Amino acid sequence: MKIGILGAGNIGATLARKLSAAGHTVLLANSRGPDTIADLAGEAGATAVPVAEAVKDVDVIIMSIPLGKIPSLKELLAEVPADVAVADTSNYYPQRDGRIPALDNGQTESIWVSEQIGRPVVKAWNSVLAGSLATEGKPAGAEGRIALPVAGDDSDAKKVIIGLVDATGFDGIDAGTLAESWRQQPGNPAYCTDLEADDLRRALSAADRSRAPQLRDLSIEKVQKMGPFESVTNEDLLNINRSLHV
Image (cartoon, rainbow, N blue to C red; front, side, top):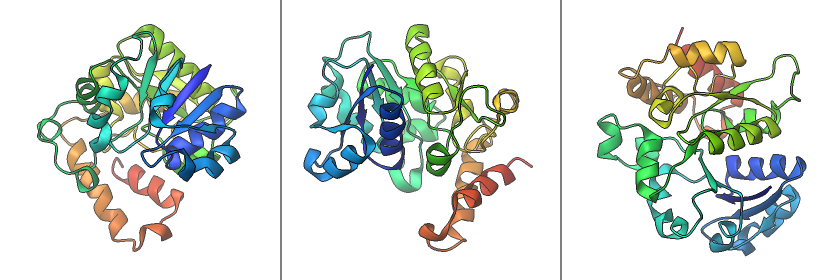
């Protein structure tokens, strides 16, 4: 498939590497222009392109930018055919994104995203730490393979994204409709805890919508108390997220 990735941060770059290695054609774009990511794209096996080219004549678009910047993509995506699957990897962190009243009042994040860009999305790859995404992928059927939830309303688009999750080294689990994707948002047991398939399904069922925002903010407080973020390891972040639900 031909895949356009919007955003070349840790998640976007890692997805570019993994999907290129799996045999897909990957176009990588960021807001600063292709020259700024040419070396990164080359190392990842992708092609650095302007943002407009990353959404042209592709089969899948992956949005991997901070949630607060997603509304800026509406015009860009307006002419993209309806049958192109659009994956949303974002999460709401008020400390980073600024306060978004609709989300503070309980709207499901990816429903808000869908409204902002004017088209359906599939929620995927939002619930895995960048370090785990980069290093913990395993072949299908391998013991201890981590599972990731995939939620959306279009069954065909969701099937495509589940297949791509598998290509990146993780079991893609159908997590239901987009309205149910709050279960994989920050502060819930399925979020960034590196669970295998059966445990992930139990974690999704155990999600508590009323407590998740407070637990999300508590996780940030715990990270901040550990000192400079550069010194916080992937294992530290896993332990913090897991500790919220003990």
